[in-house]
Amino acid sequence: MKKTDYETPSFALALTPIVLTLFILGTQIFYFGVFEPHIPLAIGLAITSIVGIKLGLQWDDIKKGIFHVIHVALPSVSVLIIVGMIIGVWIASGTVPSIIYYGLKILSPEIFLPSAMVICALISVSLGTSWGSIGTVGLALMGIGEGFDIPMYWTAGAVVSGAFFGDKISPLSDTTNLAPAVTGTDVFSHIKNMMPTTIPAMLIALVIYLLVGFFVIDTQSVSFGQVEGITSALNENFYISGWVLLPTVVVMGLAIKQYPPIPSLFAGVVVGGATAMILQGQSLQSIFDYANNGYSISTGIQEIDSLLNRGGIQSMMWTISLILIALGYGGALEKTGCLKSIINKIKSKVTSFAGIQTAAVGTAFATNIVAGDPYLSVALPGRMYSPVYRGMGYSTLNLSRAIEEGGTLMSPLIPWNAGGAFVISTLGLGIVDGNLENLLYIPLAFACWTAPLIGIFYAFTGLFSPKATDKEKERWASSNEAVSEFNDDGTPKINDAPVER
Image (cartoon, rainbow, N blue to C red):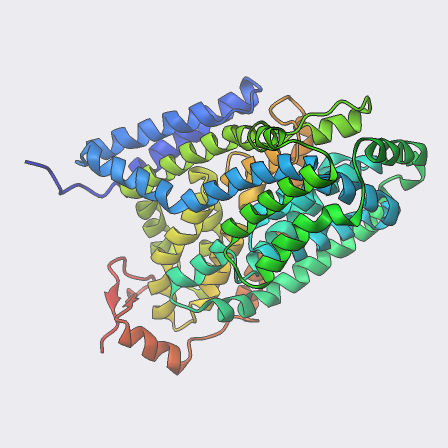
């Protein structure tokens, strides 16, 4: 007979698979000096499964939990596959080379970093996907930064700041829709409530990048002979024209008309392939090869070759395999109750709104670290903390903002997270090859980590921290939503009850 009853892990037992996994991960990265988190996370999945079996779970139960989380994130894996195709095809079509060419002609080194952030933010808002923005315009901006002799980590920081912030406030973004869905709010109220942190964080990043461009980076040493060499080589190897930007126009147009991201991006692959054949003289067979295996060119100029020899579905397999393993690990942690046990321990210690808001941001961030999955980092704290906010009389809009900032914005700053792995791979930061200095993009992605800090500041000061309205309370009651009751010491009870009608 199949066993269905199982124990809830104690706090110490719940921490065990996480601590062991982080220890193995740290050994791999810092002791062996190899940035390949796949096997440590796979071992962590096995450890978590053993804990689950010890608690009374059957392997079939754990397997369902693993594949449930993987299934939820499959649309993002699909985006990765299409972005791989786009990169290869858009290089072949001349789209990426033309963006680099015009960027080097129009932009100046002093304003490049703030421009890169703003451009990526606008693209991400339109597309609803930070990954699509990074894989297209972000890649081209890396080439422009290379031409200006700006360190890769500075360019990557600006690109990540813009791309993930644009994703955060786009109504087309999956995480922007997930956060209000799990907290019981609507997407447009959620976006509006994020503006008090979004706008200041973007302005802070913009000012920093401007100051860096004028006073930190030695723009006087930029070799305009090198810039001329790059633009000349691009002109010699590609047909440079405004016409080759047609794929970007098509994708942006479909996004503005609110078509879903996956078909919109795939339309960009098709139009890019047609552009490559018509304007660049490529064959259909070559287009298929570029979409699968990536573009290949030898111009004799290292900056161009290292940037343009990339793309294709196969180039995404390292990232996709890491994401699938990380998702499986996160699913096992959730199914065994380890994450729930840890969150309940945190909930039992919280006695104020500032505390719960800080805990929600921190839990989303910590889930990103241990589970490697931005979706789980949004969904799990959203489900677990919602009753506490209702019990305190605060709008769950505060929670949806907290988990969006601790989840979505922090995911690209964790190298083994789905977001971080994609950034490192797509932007060619070479971390796997030992270029660990390029991990400096993490602290330099100012917009990503300043927003959560601003949100926590608001929680302690009471600014932009809305209380629940009568209409919201009525909606909780009509939907029979869970509301925490509180102990005499002010801590919420763990067993949350629904609102009495």
